[in-house]
Image 1: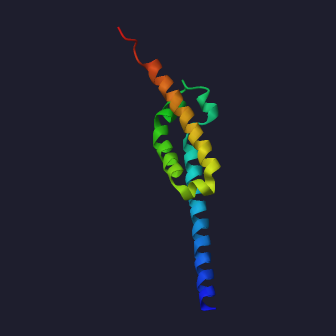
Image 2: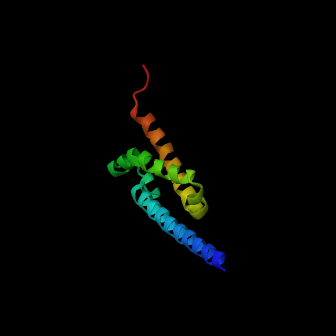
Image 3: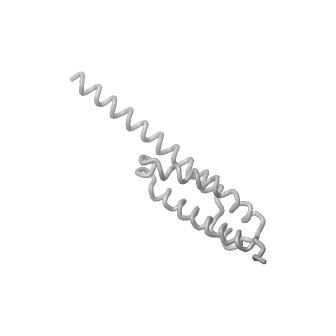
Length: 107
């Protein structure tokens, strides 16, 4: 009987811990989502706000990469993490294109 109580207490603590972690990962995703360039902004890459957002995107995309590397976060919020990673890849593609446009042609 004593062991059952201990096991239930451990299960409760683990469930609370997972709940807190799920909430924290959700907050992290919301923060990243708010700071990344939106799909609508990517349609106008020449605007100053969009260009500066594209330049700052690597900082936020590293955070997405860290969440991708965390197996518990992936299990709890994998679809949201994959969606943000897809947006990061699109922003990186745009940045690569902008870099090519900004460079002078070889002489």
